[in-house]
Image (cartoon, rainbow, N blue to C red):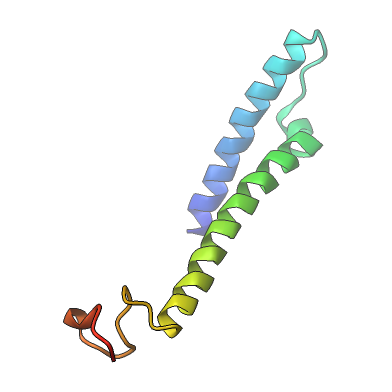
Length: 90
């Protein structure tokens, strides 16, 4: 999983650099190298915005699933119940 994460981050940096340099050329400014882009605020801003949404989604799913299960949601079966017990009061 760590390798997949690093590879996806590398691909994001390459694609982000291409988009950033296209924007720089459109504004008649100098392009940046890959290392220049990775150390720029644009790269970190895009990375952290992406991570923020993912962490928020995962955290919400984890917290809500625990909360709903403990509150006796009809969509959740009691802890230790069989798979057919969904929707049955425990």
